[in-house]
Length: 319
Ligand SMILES: [Mn+2]
Image 1 (cartoon, rainbow, N blue to C red):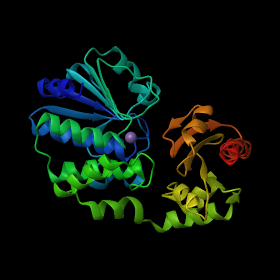
Image 2: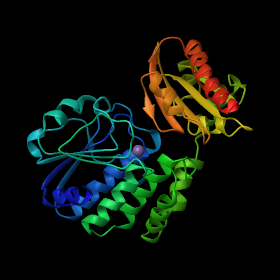
Image 3: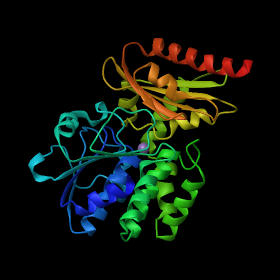
Image 4: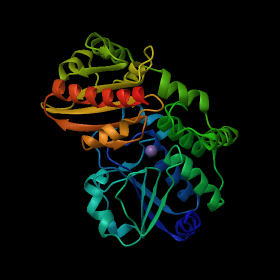
């Protein structure tokens, strides 16, 4: 199928590339990389996201340059959804994609409902960016240092800098090849994992004050008030930091979005599965990193998530 997709893209002239709502660095990285490659081949390649809010550091490496919100469907002969597992995650572009004839879906999520004329899913790949690298090789195109940097950004984003369970030999191999192709690995890791603003540090200060650590599970709740006082809504790497405490097996951060709306980021150590928990609350993701949004009481939901984590710890304990 990857060959078929490579050929289809080579034969296309005007391609619209669609990311998922609230795109992460994998989604933005591989979307921008694909757009660069298609443009290199002399094609029109426009990028679309239904999103009012882009990640704060996403302008790095031009990740959010030239992204549009509305698709003029008549302009394209091919639509490609990258890193999008479900129709819901296409946001307002859902029906556009559904109704379009010539669609391609490239993805690495195991649980999905998105169909397309051509689908290439490899759940053994760490990231959609890792798949994209295979696709570009298949297309036999020159991978510039910028494209290498974009794909590297996607890989370190989805693997949490090679820390998540989805990291495998091929991930390191791909990263090595991207390094050889000129990916700016040191700066990318600094930008995405080390650099922080003073505002973010202040917000985390509030978050740590409210942190609960019990039975190897850590969590905290971030209110709109805290975000206002620190002048940022960017929690940076907080959820991973919570997981890094002692022998924690689970960590989650509940962040208020609107009056009664909250988003939850979940992380787990190897051998535990937060995708399963997120799924129970209508979300999804990967075994070590997943999330969902909900409307209701954050304290109640924290207790429910906590109980789900305890169930897994209990199950493991009995084995
Ligand atoms: Mn991804």
